[in-house]
Image (cartoon, rainbow, N blue to C red; front, side, top):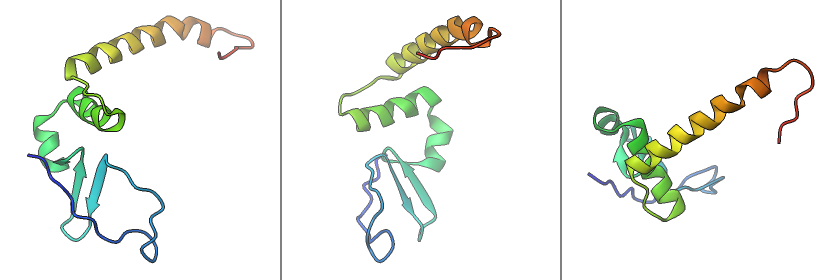
Length: 96
């Protein structure tokens, strides 16, 4: 189910500090909408990777699949663990 939030005045005196398509808070209804889905439904049905894919698809404009996100996270974890010896070595550390 995709929720299309209606535009309501936001910010101090109706002047927004920031706007996003990624999430919406409906304070009157007590609802948080992330990537078009109510968060209370999203947490029951979605994985971390599928939620990240929804957000990345909205933010980047190109569709990202859960499988692509899972692979990207896996590669990022391998890269991070490969750098641990360098980062934990005694002495000065250069961060590229």
